[in-house]
Length: 165
Image (cartoon, rainbow, N blue to C red):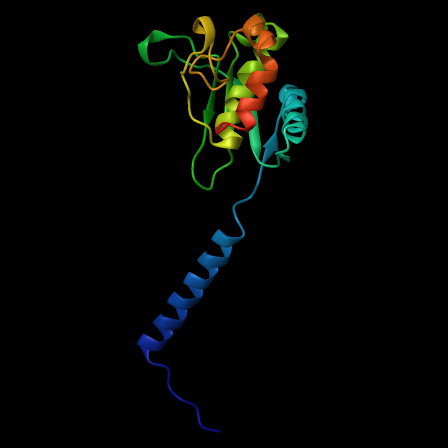
């Protein structure tokens, strides 16, 4: 039986090919997913249910929501929560632990739905105003406070899942 000697170039080519093939498969199958919602799980369940009602079903499988310290935003405004997104990483929402418990339930929902709009729907801020200075979108830089959210909830939820309409 004849064997052929492998040149260093052939060996390097095989190693590079194997590395590239491995990298391709790891990227095509995605990164490991992480789901940690803790006390915020009811808000995510409500968000999924609303998405289904709006005709755009979403099942959240990759998200972390946790309390943390948040510094002031540009201009010194208080930050209630913040979405962190990066390529190939689990989206993360940090809720201002110093403020969260001071908010009423509707305001908490508006804040988390706003952040979920960033993290899960890829929405950016929309600071357009409509009637009497009311935000057109839940995606306004500062999410609508509880009573405004409640008064315009149907509109805000429809717009959140159907921004082009």
